[in-house]
Image 1 (cartoon, rainbow, N blue to C red):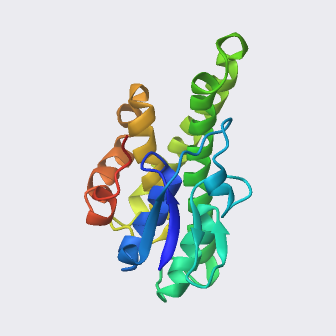
Image 2 (spheres, helix red, strand yellow):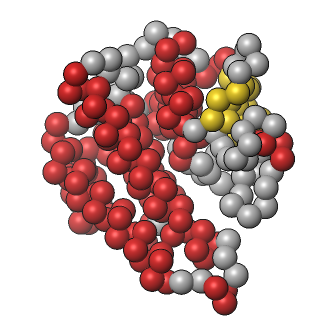
Length: 204
């Protein structure tokens, strides 16, 4: 059985579990408790990943994998799935969309950590605002692409974007992103209803 350091609040862990669910592998993953934090290092995770970040997975053969992009591709290969297009523009489009979704999560995490992990006297609103500006730019780009998106989590790029939007709902509800990006909101309402998304919803 595979072992995964798990956190229900992590959009990256959710991304892995969405892939695992789609690929029929979720029941083959043992979920290990973790407390990943940018300051307080969890040495349990470090046994799998020297960066002490989730997700971190150990294969049945003992190989340790980390970063959601690597783990998702491993799961896809293991199940001989088709979440990663193999060739041509479809592959590069999918990987670029994965990078866009991951980038939203990265920027949102940095904005959140500015106030949740940094001491009050050292917090910088300008830094957080700059991260959220990246989020807004990425959402604008998605709004221009979304009419061509599948409504099913059948592609790693769309899974990453879906998990990123879910994370914004979870941690940044005050952004009310749906009001500015109605086409993306309409797509996400359908995409998020898929069982693989609904059963992995980010929560505390």
